[in-house]
Length: 93
Image 1 (cartoon, rainbow, N blue to C red):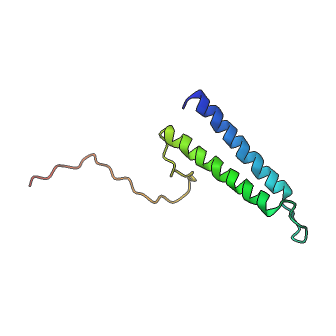
Image 2 (cartoon, rainbow, N blue to C red):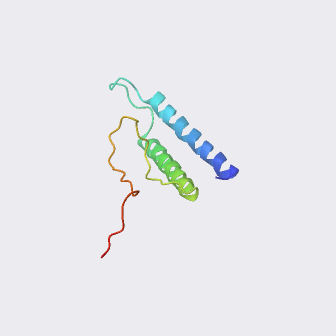
Image 3 (tube, rainbow, N blue to C red):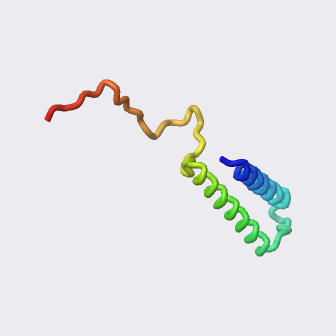
């Protein structure tokens, strides 16, 4: 990944984290309190998150990363089985 893409990736991560923190700080803990942002502003923030995610996917694809990869826990049950090809013999037909 080039230095330019690395910087862009860091900027996108910072923007995503900052937007998330702002939303968490503005979200009232008491349901009786009115939400301080208008519906239009909430939609704009959602669009920003969508744009950030789309660009992060583009950068990952350009870097040759599989964008379907998800983090896995060590103790998570595997959904695939690895079969060794070593020791298999070619069949004579």
